[in-house]
Structure formats: structure tokens, C-alpha cells
Length: 230
Image 1 (cartoon, rainbow, N blue to C red):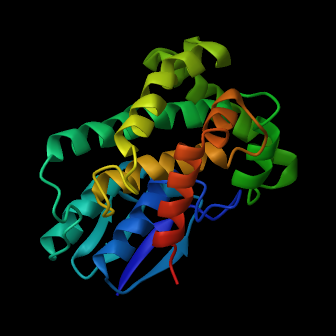
Image 2 (cartoon, rainbow, N blue to C red; image 1 turned 120 degrees about the horizontal axis):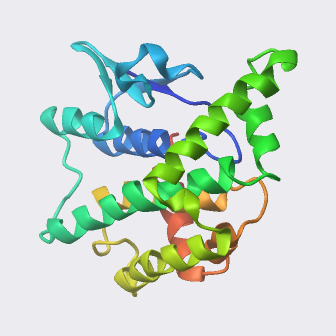
């Protein structure tokens, strides 16, 4: 039995973190026996982040490392896909670009931030919650400015992510999934990010762009419904 350590569920998602959702989908696709263990304190896990899995051979952190572990156990997340280079590019686009848009929608929006604070950090005593989480937020937004995306307005960020969204829609075409008619590894990353965008507690330009695109929103729902744990 594998134990997935994950951030809690919220906003209609299996977890606040799209990477934790991706890890759940990987475990489902691998067909292994697993259970979840919620934690809001990643500091004691590898890389001081979640998701992580507890296995007979130890604790493994990071969704990519979880993927590698499951593949070594025999899981095949690609199936008949031959164009893995394109699939890999979509994974990187989702995890190294789209994800930061999700972060800024949640942590950088002054209207949404109070909702995030009260849901993510409910375990912190109310009298301490605002000052403690305010320092978390300040540090994260500083890091996102260093990364670059945090320097732009919501409108500018939407302009930046538009080619990504158009590429996903074009790739899907008449197919059910990114790499054809069978679900595969890139779907677990891309759909997780789209689902996270759609789950914004309040509408944002990014969330509305995805919600109003039938190709993208239907695709996200299709993957989510197929991979939802029993």
C-alpha cells in the first residue's frame, strides 16, 4: 500500500495543489493500492513540498519522482504514444508556466487572497493567521517577481498564457486527449492545471478564459471524471 501525502481537498478539487491532483491521477493510472494522508505542513517531507508518497522503500517527494517510481514498478503512462517529445513539451508548458498563473490568481489577487488564507491555513490560530500568512504571501510574491511573471498585470498575464491555451485546443482538435484518443502522461499535467484555473474561488481573466472555451473546459472535465478515485 502506497500512502500519498497531499494538501487537503478544496474548491471542488481533490487537492488545493494541481501537483497533488496529478499525483493522485498517476496512482490511479498505475493501478496500485494507495490511500491519502492530508497534511498542510510540507516541511518534513523531501524538498519541503508536497506531494510525496510513502512506500516500502521510503518517502519519495515531487510528482515527477513519483512518476519515475511508479514507472520503475511497471506503470506505463504513455501507452501507444510515439511522439513523446511533443508530450514532454506540453508537460513543461503546464508545470513551468501555467502553474505560475494559477499561483498568481490565488496569491496575487487581493480579493481572492483572503479566501486562500482562510482555507489553506485554517489550522493556524485565527489571531496569528493574518500576520503569519502575510509573510508567506510576501515571500511568494517576491519570488514570482524574480521569476518574472509577477511583474505583469492580470491582462498582461492573460496575453502571455493565450498561446499556451490556443496550443492545447489546437492539439486536442477532434481528439479526446492531447496525444490522441487514449489518455496519457501529458494529460495528467495539463488537465490538472486547467482544473486548478477553473477552481478559482472568484472569477479571474484566466479562469473565465478557460471556462468560456468549450474545448478546454470539456477536456479538463473529461480527464477529471475519468481519473477521479473511486
